[in-house]
Amino acid sequence: MGYQGAIAFVTGAGSGIGKELALALTKRGARVWVTDVRGRAAEAVAAACGKAAKPRKLDVRDAGAVREAIEDAAKEGGRLDYLFNNAGIGCGGEVQDLAVAHFDRTVDVNVRGVVHGVMAAYPVMVRQGSGHIVNVASMAGLTPSPLMVAYAMSKHAVVGLSTSLRLEGAALGVRVSALCPAPVDTPIFASDYMPDLPKPAWMPNLKRFLTSVAGPAYPPSLLAAEALDAVAKNVGVIVLPSRARLLWRLARLSPRLAEAKIRAALAAERASKPAH
Image (cartoon, rainbow, N blue to C red; front, side):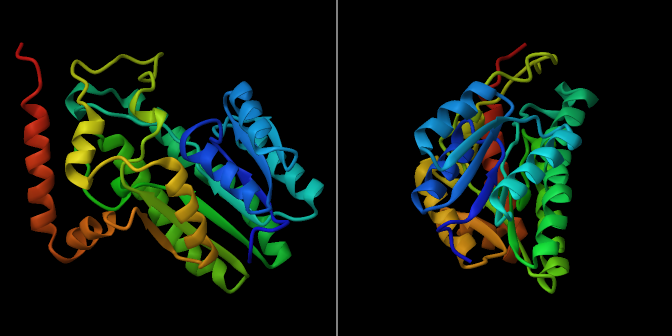
């Protein structure tokens, strides 16, 4: 299944990975629905994509709105070839400084948002006998990720959903992949911290912590291009960039060595914590 003439639906496409996926998809000949909770951001990205893109304001926490938008895309396009469940939020800080509300918000967007997309698109694709769902997870969904426990929990859930549904959907013609990037140079590192919830007493520098574990942040445009190549090959768990696969393999083959590397980075980051 290629991209030329395909109908693709991207959530969280107003910036970062979602924006670059939308741009890359249109360059490869797809017609793309560019959706984001920030309507103006979706409009700006759609304009940059050109006539093959259509913007829509969409909060993935609203299951009814997600279903309506995906069904509209499938009806207008005559089918739905790709769903990129990309919308997500970060949540950093030590668990001792967080509240249940931080976990709830993370689950609402990062887990339920993905579920809403899957439950809207999957029936459409089953009826068609074709389609590909790409759920954007993270390396944090494959390895231990202290200082971002709520986020890691949500991304482990996305990986589990994806790898399990992949087997279930294969006989029905539906492909499913989990995209698990290492640190990517996106606004998530500089975004406001859930402004309606209390900030933790100490916020670690997550970019510094993550890059000390997995290497320099990767440009989102390169990530998008490589991700689309892997999706075209129907790779089930897409770990990017290629150097990140070393940490993934280490975590699987020698968990103690991987944990030692992560513990060292954790200790270094904690050393920057201001004394009370």
